[in-house]
Figure 1: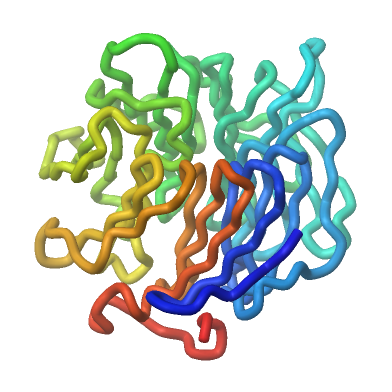
Figure 2: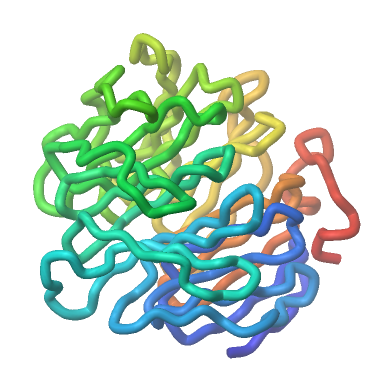
Length: 336
């Protein structure tokens, strides 16, 4: 594994891992990123220099397809894709102690692949969604199943808690048909379905097709060359915009914490959009040399990390890409 700082254009650090990367995210202090993927290993990297930090966390006989760190920084959750046929009851997701890297417990309820994991804002629960068309909510402390199985018509490719944790949104996707797929919103305490929106054609290669607004009143969905924004109480379509040259490419979306902009991924390209005054494209489009499977923004919204099909983890400062009015820069953590 190598890290190199590239000169010219925006400031960035490129880390070559030699293994396909399916999941990347920042730690809550913004000083490190965590990556997981084809080799079945979670690794931490320093944001400022791209150097690996500490010992990695290793799984056996599986790829890490999804991962998340609890807001209280105590637990790491990873969703697995098994490399060989699995037996009923075999591990689907593992919860680790984020400090000691010891396994706390594992859970099962899916078959072969967990496409998505998410952790509630209070760090007390986590959710999983998988290829067997089911979603679950689990206790972070005991591993007990709290909600589910929540049954869907297709593979559950994303689970995402609302900002206050009282709801869970899911997205379904498939690889072989063109029927519109659904967004479902559930009560996260009792599993009651509150809303179903049959709206989008999601792909199983979309790692993050949904994003909540910080007030929980809107839900953004990226798919099939466009982004749609829905009212989360009624399911009403509030707005939509097209992603240039995206066509039917798998798409992902993330919103900045300050709610001023969104980042949309379509295959190899990243585009930036104003979400505070209107949905116009801003900044420069970024092209990668291979498909981008995962993306995350730093807590201060000034740095972005991508996990790519070619095994690269790329850290990029947004200070040279977006106008300063969109950014909340934490100078101590940024790439210089």
